[in-house]
Length: 241
Ligand SMILES: Nc1ncnc2c1ncn2[C@@H]1O[C@H](COP(=O)(O)OP(=O)(O)OP(=O)(O)O)[C@@H](O)[C@H]1O
Image (cartoon, rainbow, N blue to C red):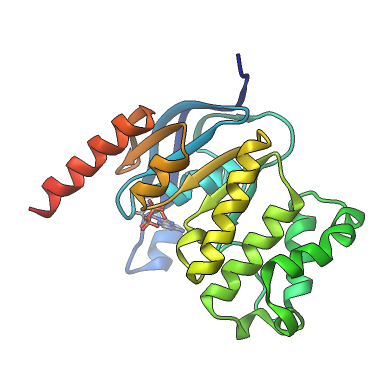
């Protein structure tokens, strides 16, 4: 029986509600909040591949940020066994004025990796990224596909116990997407825990053991992949009519 590696108990996360008058908002006692996650409650087992699905704005990225420790819950308990999971997302963590190499070190150090480990893996990170001389250039000169390459290569080569993937796979060209997918499949075989946010039902069906469906911040369903994805696809089809 596999043991739980991540546990969420009645998790609530809010953002300050947008106001047209930020000064008034700052001094007002009545702080309006927008609840992005409302009462999430599930566990993830070691070695499991968990898919997170839901419409735009449903709270998927917020959930991954919480799981990686970038944000704290307003209410509820979040527990992760061992080291902080590594979040692989395009928006997270790049400093535009620093080079690709400097960003590799910065991100990897912030995620708790030792310099020696990064030194040892630097060559394979650069090789996997296929960024060649661009690795010495500032990240502000990168295309979104190149940023995806840098983010993915850094995370996959440092081999974290838990990998959180936020839609990065949809960005690179098809050859790189295949390479990433193969690398994830390899991690899955090595019993790494993978949590994947994607809008691709096909990919979820292909690699996920279980799925959490988030709708407007609530946990609409959790369960076996095919059952939940089919429910979600039906729901989305009905919405389009
Ligand atoms: N920093 C923020 N401040 C205020 N509201 C935010 C912030 N980040 C996200 N939100 C809001 O929280 C909700 C959930 O956003 P989130 O990015 O988690 O959704 P998502 O499911 O990942 O969306 P998508 O599929 O479009 O990437 C949205 O309504 C969004 O507008």
